[in-house]
Image 1 (cartoon, rainbow, N blue to C red):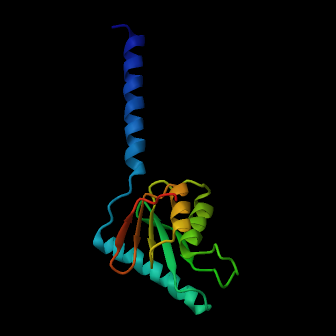
Image 2 (image 1 turned 120 degrees about the horizontal axis):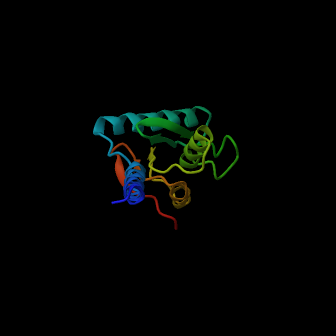
Image 3 (image 1 turned 90 degrees about the horizontal axis):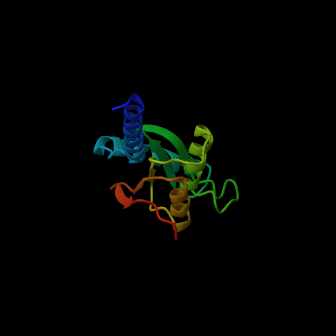
Length: 145
């Protein structure tokens, strides 16, 4: 087999491997109960922060590759902004910190079930899974409405 053919074959294999790795990295890691409880508690801290300034009692955090990348207390009352739900605040925070729109593979933890608008924003950002409430209910993959 000529060297060109061999290189082409190896090149194709590398492309296939790279494509597989991209798909795998886009999948969220299944969080352990201990990790999930830790992230839910971080969301509760955001809820307490919101309550401390007289806002609605909601909090959320965003986790990517086992790291906290976004935090969101509700700022609806504080900012007089009906769109400042905790989940959207956590998403915006992560996008700002990471310097990108895509949050592919991230997991959203919130103190209550995200509303349909928050879920649509999460879907647009590429969030892979949502968990909410003290029982860590699996809300699944966010969907647009």
